[in-house]
Length: 261
Image 1 (cartoon, rainbow, N blue to C red):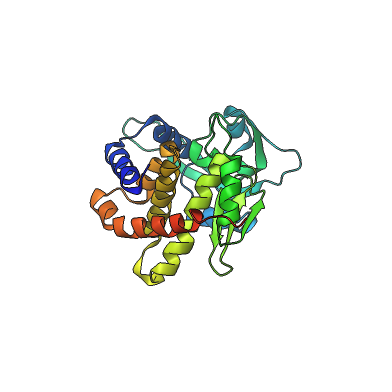
Image 2 (tube, helix red, strand yellow):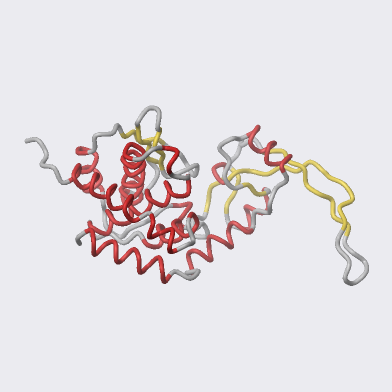
């Protein structure tokens, strides 16, 4: 698939996206984690700065996941609610108690209820060979680390190094590698102050989607909800097209070069 064909495929998928099942699943999952006060947010960060999603012990059990033995819980304040006795009146907060919650990374068990944005892409075929080919050609150091559920990967700007989650499928690692390479080339070809974080993430994931499509891989179930989460404005999408196409071409030039014999 050529770049223009892949781009049209992305544009159509983006424009037609209207709360597909996976996105609904993600929203439903996220909704289980009620908003936290500033105090609780600070408490969670101080105790576990890598925490992404927290829930009580029994709440995780309802998702068919259990907290691993020996894990230290995160202490937060939970409100004590007094139910309203009269119709059309609100419940009242009559105080607070200390509660214990655990991050997703501290649990294990069923993953079927986790959205693809958390557990990563899965595939029926093995993409290990493609991943190996890409790793031989990229000009950025790539390290594999067990990041659990913290993230699928990251680009370390100061070190100009990419981290990939060693626990993810080869397909997810390929997609993430393209995403982080896009950060590397996009950040090096545009001024940092000229693009917002939303725009940078949008360019990186669009680039990953296009490059995967050009290799015959459809990552729409992951990429489209991710993109919609950053920019839900088609005009903004169009404005980023030049950045996206330039970044795609930079990476294509790298990965299409002949390997040394």
